[in-house]
Length: 326
Image 1 (cartoon, one colour):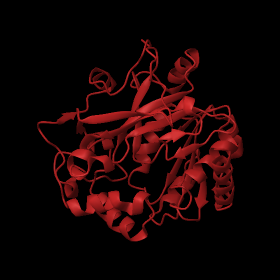
Image 2 (cartoon, rainbow, N blue to C red; image 1 turned 45 degrees about the horizontal axis):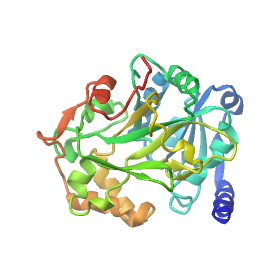
Image 3 (cartoon, rainbow, N blue to C red; image 1 turned 120 degrees about the horizontal axis):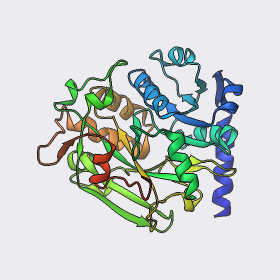
């Protein structure tokens, strides 16, 4: 275990050298009560709505790692006063799928702060998030001694085929993709990570029905009060401190959340084609091969799909819990 920890730390230190400050605001980072860390590549279509969503929730400052975008994203981010930007000039896959870069910034700037770490297509929703911002949520977590927030990744989709599910820089993803599967999640407790591995949803139903065990994991820990020595091990699925990986296990007062995942839009087929060539994603980009092979699919199913109607709906359906927070 100690040897694995040392190797991980050495790899992170090596990949930290690939980061080049592009537009960084140290004073604003230091003054921010909370931080959001995100690794991106060619996400101009999502980024305005992404920033707006997390600004509404009250994120203090954004730390963005740009992995060789060529869609104008760098220029756009440079114009945002609440964004600090680094260029990540290296292999996404070799850097533990971007997590070495994220862990570097979290260790450098996040200690003592509440930190959100998400992908650019992941939008956090938690109990009463329409009325209560992240300061209110984290105050509640502090009060009950809960230093992290467990979340289920909820894949969202539109009415028609992917080719007509169009996301642009001016789009609201919740309007473009308002549907999700109301059941068919599976979970198993992993004693090694002390967390739950969650699978299922539309991804298993439509893309991995013939090999459900290979369906991507839907469990995340997107919000953490960061401390020295902490790091994500596998994406945001779990951390090296096992106590943080499952904050809802055997705790009636615990709060949990949902990450709405807006992957299933017209951009996906082009993205899948690119990633099959680049091979920079997990398991040789086999997930993207499944998307490409499926063609121009319709994901909505009248027997399974339900339209999103707010955080209360997600609590009623059992996707997340408020514990004793009223």
